[in-house]
Length: 269
Length: 101
Image (cartoon, rainbow over all chains, first blue to last red; front, side, top):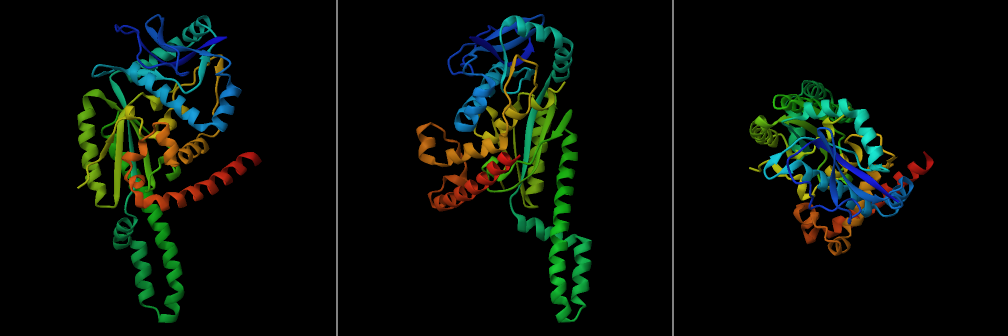
């Protein structure tokens, strides 16, 4: 039995509906299913291979399989999103949405039609970009905080005025205070950056802080933001990000940004 | 002065970024089949562990670590080994946590 794997929904295009990227099963042709002013980007899959239990089992036993599938899913959507240099907005699906036939897909498109139209309308002329900030040099940041944090400075003054024996015990307390204050300042720092990104963004959303095991990076992530940027502000955004990076570099941080992404974070309905 | 590092999504270099979006974000429209991936974070760690075995990755044509200076130096191999052991430990703990959940 064959089913239809759905990648994304976009507005009707003029372009020839042929895709260079092969479908999620590595074989099937990716094609277009038109519905009113919409196009669903789909490919045929074997329902035996893509049964929910089957895929869950595969994901557990063979994680590289799921990695490969996720990358194909992304590549198909990337191709649907790009035409020469132009980026068109579309609604990306989450991995693993399958219809048993065209009739069933059409019913769903018909049912959700107003919602789909309104999301597409909202995304029109906008792109999703990702910004991730990492703490590159903990010592630099800690040093900066210690120099100007009032709570820490007061405690240090207090300790300095104590006789040596007593001061020794206070050192532990100071260490705790420093750790707490640095955590607080780190949060403030992230909040501040998030606020500044608002200047460039039509909309923005914080993502989970990904652990080192997930990012494969040596340094810890301190901020993960997805921004929805108007096309005519992309250059401003890039310049802003460059300036931001130079600013945070001196404080011991660095940033990485990427895009345009399909609007995974802004297609909620 | 280091410039902000710009990465292109299509390079598919940033595995975490792709998995984060494809498996966890995007619209969930009511299909006839909706595949649910249980623990994406655990999955990503597993994938990284597999890919950390460089020979296997080469064989499969995966080369994202070559752009990652943290992993590219031969001298860091011992460190990778250490990290591998550490990750396996954490993975074991995570798996236990899931089993008992």
